[in-house]
Length: 189
Ligand SMILES: [Fe+2]
Image (cartoon, rainbow, N blue to C red; front, side, top):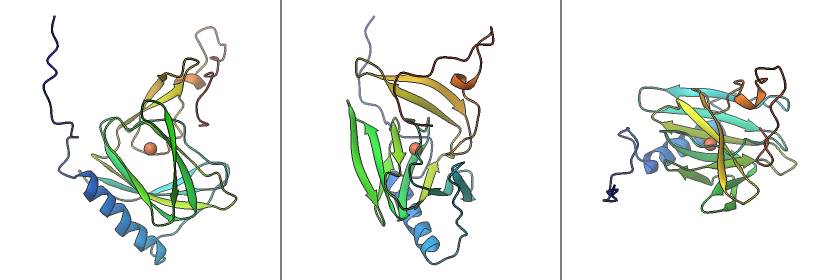
């Protein structure tokens, strides 16, 4: 059997582009700086609120207290972008290996389809970000880097939220009631 490797359009099913999403998060971040949106911080549970949403995109405001992070994840069939309103974060992203880049006030990042990353607040001060996803998030997959350095998917969830509090497979006891073994590596949840 031969596989056709002819180029295809690697775009998400949305009329919005990554550039438009970056613009959307940047203008919304400016609203946040002007005090138009309430921000909360919760060191126990990651805090986020959807500021607006329609058929094409969702825009979320997210806060990060020191040490808060996501796990390595993708955004399924959604494009994404973020702008840092205040504070500094570190993004770890997969590009044939784990790489790191700083994200600080006013800066941001765009997430094409297939982008796998983890965001963490390594500073002693809280941080605030605005995120946009298009089409709105419907699912996320989580990953770990295994002992051979390969990226391995651990589980997938259906979610409309970028910071889901959903029970995930690793948290679900096995049929005999035992807890599933924790992944050998990977970001904190
Ligand atoms: Fe993400």
